[in-house]
Amino acid sequence: MKTPEKHPQEEERLKALKSYKILDTLPEETYDNITKIASQICQTPIALVSLIDEDRQWFKSAQGLGATETPRMYAFCAHAILDIDNTLVVPDATKDERFHDNPLVTGDPNVTFYAGVPLVNEDGLPLGTLCVIDNKPKQLTKEQVETLKILSDQVITLLELRRKKDRLETVNDELKSTNQDLEKFATTAAHDIKSPLGNISLLADLLNERMENKMDDNEKEFLSMIKQSADRLGDMVEGLLAYSKSSKLEKITPTNVDLWEFREKFEQLIGNKSSFQLNWNTDLSNIKVNISALEQVLLNLVVNAIKYNDKNVPEIEIGIQEDQHFLHFYVKDNGPGIAKEDQVRIFELFETINKEDRYGKQGSGIGLTTVKKVVELLGGKISIHSDKNQGTRFDFSLPRFG
Image 1: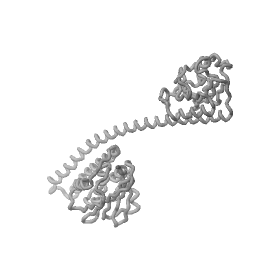
Image 2: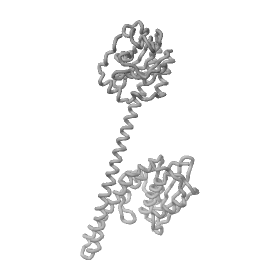
Image 3: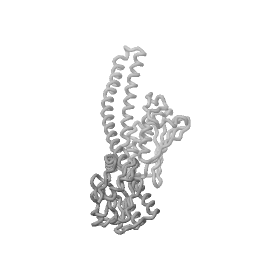
Image 4: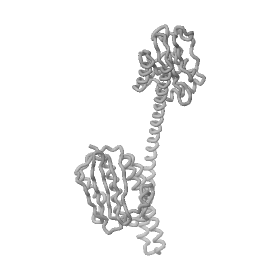
């Protein structure tokens, strides 16, 4: 018996094999299907996906064989991987000086015929073989050998997909960890920033009250600018926090929502009903939806419709319909509308169309970006329909449950 030599790039080969994280894993139907096909086409009782480890050959799939591994020193496949360009064919191992006294030939499973195609990865390193075995002498046709090569390519494809999937999962886990760290940092930083900003705004108010008669117009304007800047930065911090946390909304379980109760609570959230008119247009009484996401989206759209309205009494209409798969919503107002050329920018982060709202405050340009992120994260879509001086309508959908 001739003991197989080590591969010239044995260290790199073993490192590559371990990178697939497949050794000692459970059987999988996709690999078993390949060995079944190989066995049927080559008309052999045994077909294997064999991977060569440091001191053994381990079978990812073993058609017609009860063993899961054998010592490497006896493995025909350990010889096959030494020539990656050719299929190792042994017509009669009992007459081959390399194998005639091999325990796998003289004993169970009585290997007589062997044909193995090296499983070569993208870097040109052999991981093992796809092989077929019989306990009597045999020859394969040219077509059978070609089919065996094609099937070996499929094994490599499965292995590469497995490695890429594992890498993606690792990257995803790392991203989740990074996002958690960033969110923790953002929350802490936001708290640390909001407190001094609140103090600045409060001090500006106190100075204005105490020094009002002692300041000239320029000094009053500077003080007003300080307060406005502090308030705006505070709003931006709040907006960024809401944007960063919006991804969590996807994990909230949809619940049954009584629309009349939701309407009452929603209007309480907005407050000051005398300053605007809010109408609801729906024949539905109950819906099943991610309530937190719906509340956040509607609140952003309705508050914007009020803040940026140029009419004495802003009029807003909320519509709700459903089809087999989605709930469809719209928020329509009687405001100044949005020019066509500006509509492509309104969902972009930090983009603002109006310099000031009806209360003299400048927006952060985060609210509509958050709305779009939430809607699309949940599998819905959002669009805008508006003309200058004709009001604005936002249409969005959310998945329907139940």
